[in-house]
Length: 363
Image (cartoon, rainbow, N blue to C red):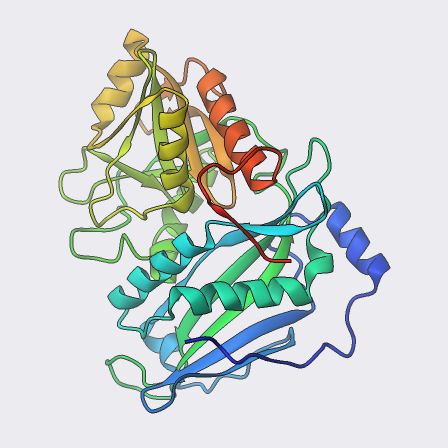
């Protein structure tokens, strides 16, 4: 199905001067474009009433299902300005496929890949002036947030019979203040992110809500992010509050925890696995016990550690801290991390040839 999208232009858009001032220092998730896209679903009509309209507050009934039962899922991707001025997305089909998997887990209807990409591209086109210029030494982009929520007014534990899909957009600079620099991770030993049969592989707000208390604990310990262990044994590395993790071994291996239903299958993670293979690295996806991190650093076998995600791209890990120990990375931001990051960013911003077929022109 192809969405029939109507457009109502914002009668009071930001001026060019206001947009320029925002794009000079966008931060992350603080400013939003002039428009938003909405599509509704009911069992009788399917997906319908697709529209782009002025960005603004939503009006929800107090009995709206999402407020009571957290039936909600979302995605995150970016639009990049290439050197020739055109605007491109990076693997939007992968985000669409992941949202479909999340939708199935949350008992939502599935928005087909073609419609997901069409919706995202339509919003980018109408708000194209919000996509920052491609300038040397900068990694500014337009962050896109598609999301779906149970919008039926009903108090009862069952899948909603009215669902709303939306896309909003926000110009983005660096995710971490101060740009790319090694981060400190706090090892959470009293909280877990997800268990077997749960929603760990779905991109849903509840997973992030559960990370907030341990994240606050991490901040209190002077750390930037929290590292979770598995819920079953508390021995194996899972992921950060919002990123996947990789280990670089001196013998040319790149190792990351296998996604087994409790870890989010990151689009950046999947892309790096393919890029690493092209750079001659052997990639292993498997269970990684915490002890392997400790022993690998002590022996010199592990040389670099980095985290990755759409928002932060690739961020070197400088240290893992717990209540009883500290594990410092020998070469945070070392040659492998740097090369992989450069390869990914150059591809996203159109500075290198896309031999994978990952990029898609939006405008």
